Length: 268
Image (tube, rainbow, N blue to C red; front, side):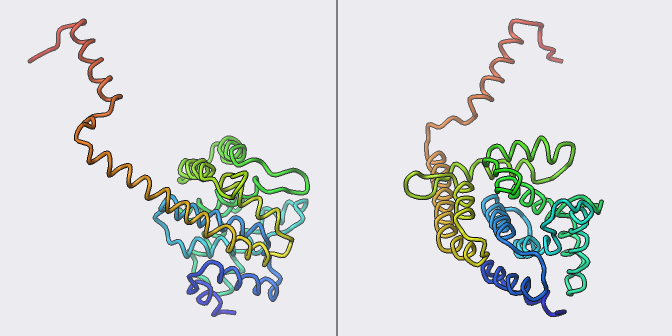
């Protein structure tokens, strides 16, 4: 298995990576289910849409593997807190470099590993947010906007995550991109619907996501990017456009009026 690290990292296609992980999970009895696929797709969209300056291949590989020792029985608190560290040790035994293992260990903060890698901050956001919008045995999944509020003011309260504000913007703008026919729904809501409609077989969810979701959302994102670029170009071509923003003009003029009515300006 020592060659596995190089094998999965050298595979650039995400769906192919998921297939590799699927068969590894069957052979090695490691955790891999629909939630892993769901969260990794959100990570892909986050990196692409917000153009994050990270190694995308490394982050997506880590997203697929960081939960490899996760336990399904959440009542075993010690195992819940220790799965990320145990998973990192397992990945070391498989030949992954130390940075990759550290990124996976820091998917949560139970091990106390510091300083945090920037890639780990992405995994933390995706892991926590993805878990909140999906149904669990003890509760229904939260709506995308509700989950964002909980992420910011409950889960990560008093914790620093360098991508939190960027992630909030990303989720809100994803929900503004409507997918499907009638009724149309936001991009995150659509992904949740595909997740819920798929059976427990992870292969079915991967297939549905790859065929029914990724082509549509990627096309919509590209259309939105071109639309924004066109708006910028049109503004640049407009000879009558304001040189300064209205807000800046109000502040400057207000300051001048205040000086005229108030004390004399020192001209020395």
